[in-house]
Amino acid sequence: MACRLADSSFLFTGPRQTPSRSHRFTPHNSTGICYLKRGSLLRRGFKHQQGLISTRRTKSVQAVATPVAPSSSESADYRKQLSESYGFRQIGEPLPENVTLKDIVNTLPKEVFDIDDVKAWKTVLVSASSYALGLFMISKAPWYLLPPAWAWTGTAVTGLFVIGHDCAHKSFTGNKLVDDIVGTLAFLPLIYPYEPWRFKHDRHHAKTNMLSEDTAWLPVCREEFDSSPVLRKALIYAYGPFRPWMSIAHWLKCHFNLKTFRANQVKRVKISLACVFAFIAIGWPLIVYKTGIVGWIKFWLIPWLGYHFWMSTFTMVHHTAPHIPFKSSDEWNAAQAQLNGTVHCNYPNWIEILCHDINVHIPHHISTKIPSYNLRAAHQSLQENWGKYLNEATWNWRLMKTIMTVCHVYHKEQNYIGFDKLVPEESQPITFLKKVMPDYA
Image 1 (spheres, helix red, strand yellow):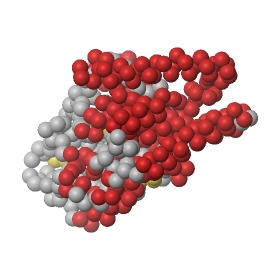
Image 2 (image 1 turned 180 degrees about the vertical axis):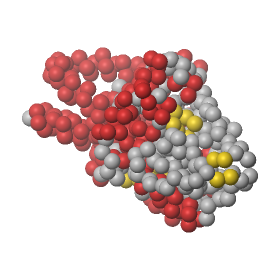
Image 3 (image 1 turned 90 degrees about the vertical axis):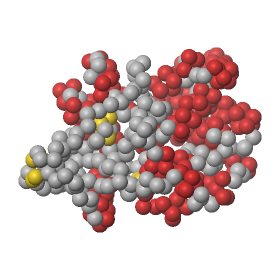
C-alpha cells in the first residue's frame, strides 16, 4: 500500500556515507536505526531507538581499509539481537547473490501449484458465511458488543478481498473468465475496482522492494520530505498514526485515474469502474433506505474501515522492516527481494482462517501461481530448504511500533531514517506513538 500523497514519482535518493580510510570513527548510531547489509552483517554498535539493544560505547579507533566480516556465530547473535529489538522471531541471513528465483521455485513440491476447485469454492463459502454472520451480529448486538462485531465483519470482508486477489493471479479456478467474474464480485462490497487493482498489483510482484517502481509501501523520498512544510507534516501523519488506514489514500489515488493505465488496459479498467459505481448507486441507497444513514455507517462504513486496517497493516508488515532494503533497479535482485525481502507473520487463528492465509506471504512472492489454500505447504517446503534466509514473526506490538516509528525516510546505507531524527521539532505524532504504543513482543 503505497501512501503517495503528492504527485511526484517518488524517485528516492539519499546521502551515502563512506568512512574515510584514515579518519577516526566510532560506530554510526546517530539515527538509532539498526540495519543489515547484503552479503555481511554489521558486527555491532547500533542502539535501537526503543532502547531494546544495549551496547557499550566504544572508544574511537583507527579505520581500516578493509572491514573484517563477522564470524557466522557473531552474525547469528547479532541477527538474534535485531530480531528481539524489532519484534521478529527470526531475521534471515542474506541470500547468496548467485541464487535465482528459479532455483527457489524448483525446490517447491509440484502439488503446491495444483488448483483444487473444491478448496477454492470452500473459501468463498467461508467468506460469504462469515460476512453474513458479521452483519447479523451487528444487527443484533447491543452498543457495547458492536466493536467485536465490527472487528469480525471487517476481517471477514477482508477474506473476500483475498479471494479476489487469488482470482487476479489466476490461481483460483484457472479459468480466466470465471476468475475475473468472481474477482470482480468479491471486490464489490469493498468498492474496489478489480482490474485497476490487478494491473497495479502485478507491478508490485514484478518490482517488489524496488525504489520508485514498487506499488506497495515505499519509503518516503528525502527530496519530497524536504520540499514543502505542508507535505512534510502530511507525510509524518500518514506514515505515523494514520498508517493503519493509508490504504484508503492508495485506493483513491491509484485506481480511478484512467491516465495511469496503458491504452490496452483502459477498456477493462472502465468495466471495473462501472461495476463499482453501479454498486454504489444501487447498494448504498438500498442500505440507507432500509437502515438509515446510521445503518449505512454501522453495516458498511465501519466494516470497510476494518478491511482497510488489515489491508494497510498486512501489506506494511509483509515488506517493511529496518533491515529490509529497497533497491534501485540496477542493484535489485529478484530472489533477494522475494525471499529475503518478504516477511512471514503469524496472526491469531481466527484471522488466518477468515483471511485465507494471506500472511503466509513468502511463498506467494516466490510464485503467484500458488493458491491460498496451498501456501502453508509451500511455506513448510521453504522452511526446509531455505529456512535460514527467511524473515519470520508472530504479530506483536513491538513489530508494529518499530514499523510505525522507525521506517520512514529512505537512506541508501541505513534503509530508513525516522522522522524524529530528521525533524524532531515537527515529529510530535511519532513521539506520541513511541510513548503510547505497547512494546510487548
